[in-house]
Image (cartoon, rainbow, N blue to C red):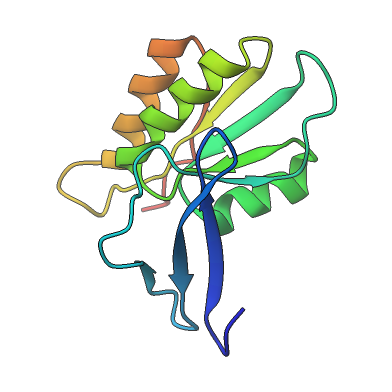
Length: 137
């Protein structure tokens, strides 16, 4: 943390640090200008078992909450665009994992990019899919 800004390290599959996501007190999220984001992620928890469940989703706060609630290792991908590349990395590197793709509900947008990205990658790699319940009218 730097002042009221949370700094989230963004790692590649080899464990190298490439970028930081900065989250301010208002929830505004920014990456370092010109820094790499593709294929980078932040991991909550540790892998301890062969075949254990691991959850992959977009936001750091969301995946932190999923980790606290489930106790499972959780991987934040930072965006819907990066969900597929990161899920493919983990699926290839750890085919033993029981992957759960945690989709965002972007129904406030013209295209629900979070849900569509999660459904597509879950289908592609044979992972389970978790989506938020629909909003009440």
